[in-house]
Image (cartoon, rainbow, N blue to C red; front, top):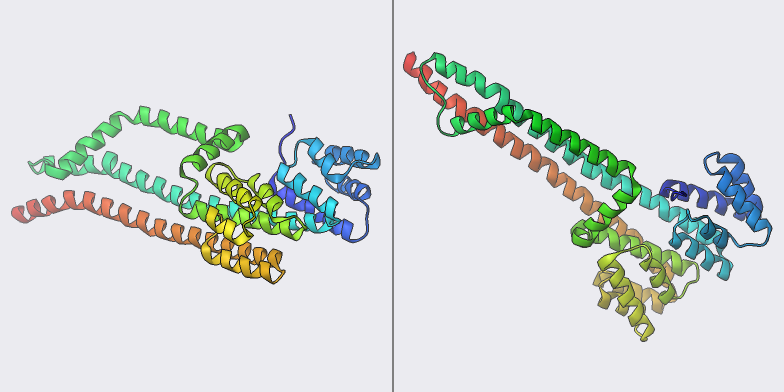
Length: 343
C-alpha cells in the first residue's frame, strides 16, 4: 500500500525539482538525479522518470503514483499548461515548508500544556494519596482527626489509592490510544476530521484555515490560474465549513462578482483583507496582493496561537498552585491550632 509523502518531503522534492529545472535540466533528467540522491523514494522516482521518458507529463506521473496530494498534482498541471512549471514547484515548496512549520508550532503548543496538566495531576495525586495519610497519623497521635475539607480530601485520597490498579489500566489504555493516534494515519485522519467538523471553524483554527486557503489562492493566481479555478483548487485542501466557504465563493465568482466581494460575502477572508485584494485586482497585481494577504494571515494565525499558549501556561500554573495551597492549608491550619493549644 502506497503511503502519502510527508509535507517535509514534498517540500524538498518540489524545491529540488524547481532548482534543477531553473538550471535548464529536463524533467526526466531531474527525476533521475533525485532518484540517485533519495534512497527512500528511489523506486518511485525511477518509475516516474521512465514514464516521463515515454512522454508523460510530470503532473500525470505524480498523480499515477497515488502518493502526491491532489492539490499538488493540480497546481503542477496548471503550471504545465501556463508554461510556469518551475514557478509552481517553487511555490509548492514554500507552501509545504510553511505547513511543516505551522504543524510543528501547533504540536508544540499542544504538547507543553498537556505535559503541564499531567505534572499538575501527578502532584495533586501524590498529595492526596501519600501526604494526607501522614498528616492523618499525626492528628491521630495528638488525639484528633482530619475533618471538614481535609477529611473529604483524605477520603478521596484513600479512594484513589484503592482504585490505583484501575487508574493504571486507564493510563495504559490512554497511552495505547495516543500511540495508535501517532502511528496509524487512517485513525489520525478520522480523528482530525471529527475535530475539524465540530470544533475546527472557530478561533485560532479558523485563522489558520484562512491562512492555508489564502496561500493556496496566492499560488494558483501566481501560476496564472483564473480566480475561479484558484478557489476550486484551494477547496481541495479544506473540509467541512472551510470547503463550503470556498465553494460558495466559487459560485459567486461564476455569477460575475469580483474576487474581493465574493471572498468577503462567503467569509473566506476578513473584510479589511478583501479591500486590499480589491485594490490589487484593480491595479493588476492581484496575485501580489493575495501573496501579501497570505503572509499577513499566517502571521496573525501564528500570533493568535502563541497568545493562546501564553494564556494556557499561567492558567495551569495558577490553578495547580491554588489547589496545592488549599490542600496544604486545609491540613496545616487545624494542626497549627492544635499545636498552639498544646503549647
